[in-house]
Image 1: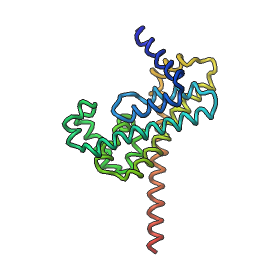
Image 2: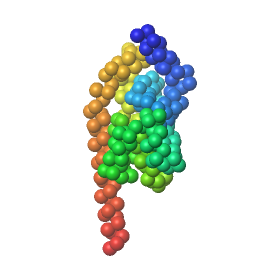
Image 3: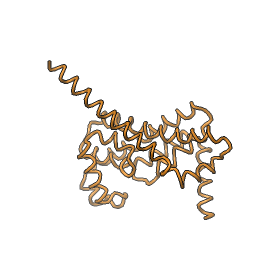
Image 4: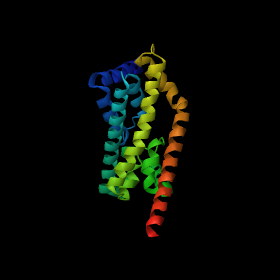
Length: 219
């Protein structure tokens, strides 16, 4: 128990020492690769400890940038190494055959948009770049979709932290972090559901707009 307590203080101290924007960028870069670092434990503390709304915006920008950077790492590896490599060695990167099949199903269902929608789906967001790389998805589209999806997800997490900063001024960073490790995932489900619904609605709206535009150009 004491070891966990010490780790929490070291973890929080690292963010205050190197600065939350850099901390979030590094954390989200790792979270978007194979490293099992939940974004729920990276962004909210940074949002909570922000001194102004401008600082929250910086957290969002750095978190989004880190997510795109991490996604590009996975995308590049998948594009360069190919599926056979991950089928053979993926288990050493915490990507077993079952996870690959899960990503395949998600990709088959949503196609390129999965890099957008998948960014708010736990267990999917950090690996969805793999099928995108294997399919050699357009790099510009990949960056765009990943940036938009990650930006929405990071915004939700940062604003949760900022909300508690504003509403509970006597709460310390250590108290918030301890609470978040036990309650955040369950308490934020409504936020998560709203984020997913908003992203799907945006995607559907974009598809409808493109089809109408294409039909107009043909006429």
